[in-house]
Image 1 (cartoon, rainbow, N blue to C red):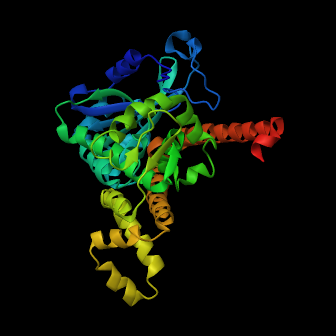
Image 2 (image 1 turned 90 degrees about the vertical axis):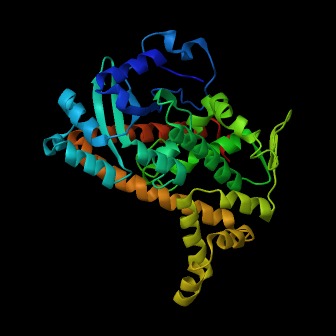
Length: 370
């Protein structure tokens, strides 16, 4: 795994926060942690020990059992991290965190030594619910990709199980979206792309090559996550892993498809049912009648519909769009106007650089892009 920064140093960042024992889970993610490049080749220079690195934004997510008390202590210790909302007090900040957007509260552009950090605070219960059910798919989607765990409460069995179930759910969705034959890179690109499907920021404000840049340098890390699951009893009769060769093969029979559908997160099943009913009911009376069908029966009908992938795509997109839009609007207020503008401009600059890179590659090697 091409980790750009020394893990011990990243763990030391947690010392700026109060009540470390109240943090149930903390992970780092993003381009400041993991190498992201389309032309990545492992080398000595990619190591964190290769020398001083330029200042970047380090992204963290922090799960706490009691957001109200945690914000109270953090405002007392790190009031400068918060926008003007800190004057509302910890009760309102905790309320805004848990009732708006993706149930996470971000503080951004916090200077730490030669870097900046952006950290989101989410309640442990909201995180577990999102991992199981993909209620917002905001943090659960980030955890489908390689992350660096900085702290995990080993006694919280429910949290650890939810993290594992979240990986399994990503596999169910990705396999449903694959054909009978696919490559390892196809699978990981699909998994990495799930949380960006329907994200309006991918249209304006994000690097157009983002998904490929995440996957290509981190193939080994993706294998570490998903190969043991594919080889487990759960998937062993569904997917054939190549001992040598390029392609995976999977069972795409209606029975196998229904098995995947029955194990999808609840929110995905709900949105999937809405999409299918909307397309297959010609009147309100039919929709009302169909909506009373048992969920298992709906999944069975969908499994025999050859266009099930299109419904699944739209279901995922609807979840992502809703949470990405609401969280972005929430971020303008929680970060403050000046920080929001600075952060947005950095995203736009990345998007422009990405577009320029695509144009340059097409001009340089036009045949590859025909």
